[in-house]
Image (cartoon, rainbow, N blue to C red; front, side):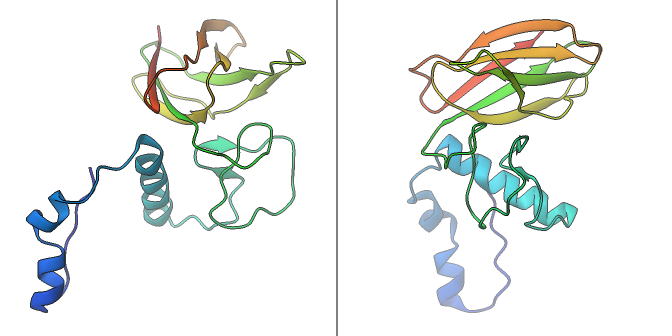
Length: 158
């Protein structure tokens, strides 16, 4: 969820941020929630917009400058929607998530290491095949992103 702390004594501004007004707003989509979470974490950590990681996806193939507020899929194209995939690591070792390219079979690293007991989120597409590897390069589990996930899917690395 997202909380609001009005920093004003203006009654109009307080009314705009009242629980009743906020409750009437539509719920964020999983994609919008991830965008907000990513932005807030960047602000808290003091990270600039020049980061090579956008929306939890590390760019691996292109080194050109990306305009602000553009999120990329693993192949570098602009993202149209997508599915927010959360990976829960229940193992006693770090895991990294890779995408299997549908045409070439080449594996592209999508995530940094996800420590034991933690989770990581990525934006993926329906029918993507993903593989979790441990730090030794051993494949831990293979995942298929289904079409009907309502914008969100959870996977467990066990």
